[in-house]
Length: 133
Image (cartoon, rainbow, N blue to C red; front, side):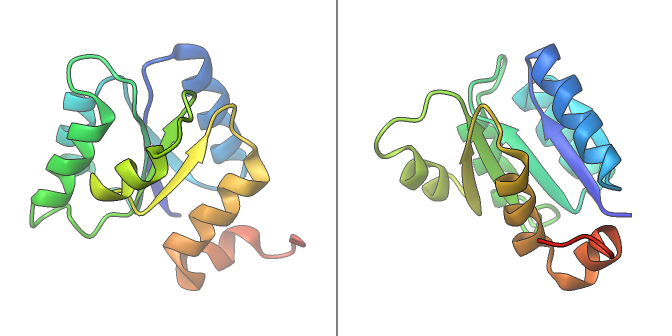
């Protein structure tokens, strides 16, 4: 079962997205700020990180940079999530080390496609067996 670290400070967004991911067969661990997200990337060894970019303590941009700078966590794919989609944000997220970018409100099928693309067939296939795209 692939493990996703969801770094999200908004309780409603965190609860909704984590429930939807768990229904799809993912294990979900939660962090409420960027500093906690960096620590959990190291301690929990997730297969993928969903990173809100507007976070308290340490924003998602800097948290992503730190995760990608650490030899133990740099291999973990990160999808940046932001409600404030501005021109250039995608490029800024990629420069910060994120592997992909998505906007809020989350469109679940689009996000799942990005998760599958980053996890690869070996991890995603058992989860989506029997589902049609």
